[in-house]
Length: 348
Ligand code: NDP
Image (tube, rainbow, N blue to C red):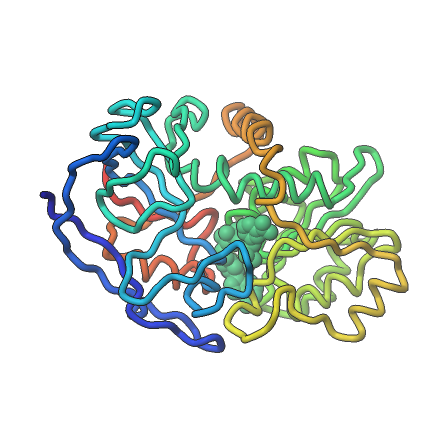
C-alpha cells in the first residue's frame, strides 16, 4: 500500500457561479499498487487544467462527450507520467505515458488501454508540452486554423485571435503567421501579455481588452479589415471583432470562455446585430471540436513537434508546483493568471 494524495470535487460552483479553489479538496488515501493483467502503476509528472473542466464542475456538462465530475470523487483530466510497474505487455517500466482520463493523484493504478505512450524526443525532453503545444491545445490551434480558417498564402490576410496569450491562442497566432497571414493580431488581458505576443511570438500587435476601446484598437492594427478570427472567448470581444470582418471572412469557433460561468447552451446565442453581420457579409462561423478530427492528430503532432524543435513555434507555459495547488491553478487559468499553457508539476 502506498500513501497517495488526490484531489476530489468538494462542491459545485453552480451553473452561474465562479469556481473557487475551495470547490476542490486534497485527500490522502492508501492506494494498493497491486496490478491486474493489463494495468500499470504510474507516477504523475504533470497535470493539465483546462477551460472545458468548468463544464465538468456542473452536474450536467451540456456536452454529450463530457461527463460531469462526481462529488467527493477523484477528479480527472489530461495528465502525463511515467510507468513504475507494469502488467501490460505494451507498456514497460520507464515508459512515458499520457491520457485524457488521468486521475488527479500523485500515483495511480491505470488500465493500459487508457494510456498512450509518448516519445520524449518528440517533445524535445519537455514532457509538460504533451499537455500543451504538443497535445490537445496545440492540435486545437493547428486543426482549427487548417480546417476552418481558410488561410491562403500570398492573399494578404489579417488574422485576429482572442484569448491570444493562452495555450491555444498563443499557438494559433504563430500558425497563422507560419501559414502565411500578413498580419496576426492578438487580443488578451494584460499589457505584459501583449508585449510577449509581439516580442517573443512574432504577432504583429497585441490588444489589451481590459484597457481602452477594442474597436478603435482593432481598426488601428487591422487597417485592411479582418479576414480570419480564431475565437476563444466570445461575448463583447467577439462582437467587436466580427463587426470589423471583411466579406467572405471566416470565424474559427474554438471556445467562448467569457460565457462559461453562465447557464447558457454551447455555443451561446449571438446578438442580433452580430448574427446580421455574419449573414450580410457571408462570413462562415463553424463550430470546431478537436476531438472530431482524431484521424488527423498523429500527423498534426508530427508537424507541431517539428515546428517546436526547429524553433519556428515558441512555447509558453505557466507552471505551478504541487497537487495541493490544482484548484488554485484551475481558477487562476480561468481568470487569466496564465501565460501560455497552465500546467501543474506533480513530481520530478
Ligand atoms: P487558455 O490557456 O487560453 O486560458 C484561458 C484564458 O482565457 C485565460 O488565460 C484568460 O486570458 C482568458 N479569459 C478568461 N476569461 C475571459 C473573459 N471573460 N474574456 C476574455 N478572455 C478571458 O485556455 P485554452 O487555450 O486551454 O482554451 C482557450 C479556449 O479554447 C477556451 O474557450 C476553450 O474552451 C477552447 N478549447 C476548445 C477546444 C475545441 O476543440 N474546440 C479544445 C481546447 C480548448 P486573458 O488574460 O487574456 O483574459
